Length: 317
Image (cartoon, rainbow, N blue to C red):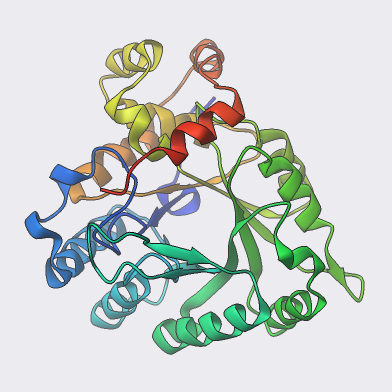
């Protein structure tokens, strides 16, 4: 439960998954984006969101190699604006192959290999240079070949030793297992990973205990998909909608406030598609949810396998 307004710069990051490419699986995105979603129009929309986020106090931006041109857009914005106080996190492991087409048959391809890591790290450095404060394995699962690849694990440990913190993101119903297994990885007695970014929201909170353990161990914890890819906004459960009305705000702000209220103090990664969505999301920092409200919202959780089956059916739009 929050008693005072949460400092935006400490606890909220803006992710560019919805703005760096024309198609994505977020609901409620279509009308928020520029008509046609041409490359330059999407770049301009990204700059507008980043400008407003910075003015509001946000100092963390999260991108990925697979988020289309997100790294390019962010690099250009940083160069144009001259901001030197922004934390930048990016991810490797997926390659964007959508060719800026809404109807591409495949939008991204996953590969957790040493070669993919080396190639994508070079691409990230070419665009963002020393601005990268955290480099993450994208969508690590318990069956990832990474866990058996000593060469890859060694390369990640070397990057961490060179001063770039290394983390991982997770997806799927077995996120907790992936979190615990990843944090066990060591090279010469030193942990490879110092951060995790997992999906946690009111519909899918199952990874929470593992994230609490990570926080207690001194790891940096980020939470993505805070509004369940738009489901909690476009089709909010009745109790969420009612609590939002009582607070005079939207369901997105309440859903994000529930993330921020967790005792393991995650950074909430929000993914607005417009400045209007950004403003609505940032109301979460001012929301004061009661213990009773948080308990009621906790009843919205779905069975993890069902949640992820539903997510896998969301079409790219």
